[in-house]
Amino acid sequence: MLSAAITYFMADSYAEELYDDQLMNSADSVIGRLRLGARGVDIDLPPAAVALLRHNFKDKFYFQVISSNGNLITGDKELPTPARLPDQSAPEFGYSYVKNEKVRTVLVEAFVEEAPAKRVFVYSAETLESRKALALHILFNTAISQLIAIVLGALAVWYGVNRGLAPLDSIKRAIAARSQSDLSPIDESQSPLEVRPIVHAINELLERLQEDLLAKQRFVANAAHQLRTPLAGLKTYIGLLKKIVDSPKALELIRQLDSGTDRTTHLVNRLLALAKAEPDALAQSSHRLLDLNEIASETAASLVLAALEKNIELSFEACPQPALVLGDLSSLQELCSNIIENAVFYTPENGKVNVALRKAETFSLIVEDNGPGIPEEERERVFERFYRILGTGVSGSGLGLAIVKEIARSHKARVSLSSGIEGKGTRVTVEFSKLDFPEQKQELEFAEEHLSESLKGKD
Image (tube, rainbow, N blue to C red):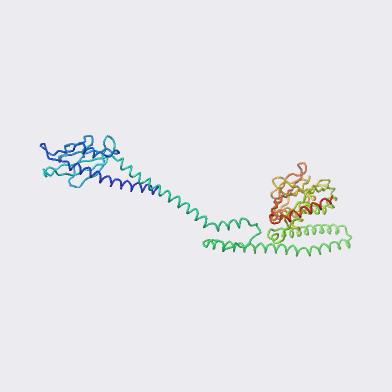
C-alpha cells in the first residue's frame, strides 16, 4: 500500500509535468495568433485553430488574452481572470475553478511584434481528467507488476522457509515419535547448522536425564534388594521365637512384630516391582507376543486360596480368541496380580470378583468386584504412589495401582476406573493398544492359530 501511494504520487507528478508542457504549448499557440489591430492587440484565431486547441475530448480547454492593466481583451469569460499579473516574464502555473470544476492554469507574458510596447498576457487552462487517467494508468500497470512480484516473492519465501525448516521438521517428528523412555541423543548431523548448538544442548540435557533416571532406578532396586535379605532373616527368627516363648503377652508382641514384618516385606516387594515397572527399566527388556488369557488365568488361579479364606466367589472369563499383546511377561504378570489381588483383599467376605478378557477394537482386561468401591473424586488420586483411601480396614503399601499405571504406560495401554458389579464396588479396565505388525503378519497369524487350538483343549 505504501509502495502504491508513492507510485501514485510520482505518476501524478510525471503527468502534471507532461501536461503542463502541453498546456504551455497551447498558450504559445494562442500567443502566435496575436495581432495589432485598429483597436489595439487582437487575436486572429479561426474556428479550425480553436478546434485544434480543443481536440482533447477528455478535457475542456479555456484561454483568455488580458491587457497589461488586467482587462479581458478576448477569450472565455467563464474562466476567472487571475487576481494579479506577474512582474516577471516566466510562466506561472497554478489551479483555479471553472463552474466548480478544478482546472490547471498557466499565465504567460506575451509581446506583439508589431507593437513591442504593447504588453499582454495569455491565460490558459484545462481540466484534469487526462492527468488523472495517466497517473492511474501508470499506477495500475506498476501495481500489477508489483503484485506479481509480491506473489512470486511470497511463493519463493514459502518454498525457501519450508525447505530450510525441513530438517527441523524431521527432528520434531523424531522426538514426537519417541516414548518417554527413549533418551538417546538426537542426530546433530541432520539438523541445520544454525540450530546445531540448540540440538547439542538438548542432547546434553537428555544425557543428564538418562543418568539421573538410571541412578534413581539403581537406588530403588538396590535398596529393595538389600532390604529383602534382612527381612527374610527377621521373619525366620520370629518363627523360631514363637516356638520357644510361652508367655501369652510375649506371643502377642511377637504376632504384632510378625505382622509388621509382613507389611514391611510387602512394601519392599512393591518397591522392587515399582523399580522394575519404571519405563526406562521396561525399555531395556525384550517385548514379545503374549496371550493375556494365559497370564490372567494363572494369576487368578494363584489367588484362589486367598479368595476362599474370605468365601469370595472368584471367576475368570477368557476371551474366545487369543488375546495377543506385545509386552514383557513378568511386568504383565505383576499388572494382573496387583489388580486381582487388590480386588480380593478389598472385597468383604461373601463377595464377588470377576476377571474377564474382552475384545472390541482392542483387547481389554476387566476386573470388577462388589466391594466398598472407590469414590469418584478419589479415582485419579489412587494412582499416586503411597496414596491410600482411609477407612478400608485393609493394610497395604499404596503402590499397587501406581505400579499398574507404570506398567500400562510402558505397554501403551490405558487404565480406567468405574463402578463394579451391579453399580457397586470397583471396575478396573486396562485397554491395550492395537497391534500393527506388517512385517510380522505371518508370525502373528501363526501365533493366533496355535493358541486357538490350545484354548480348544482347555476348560
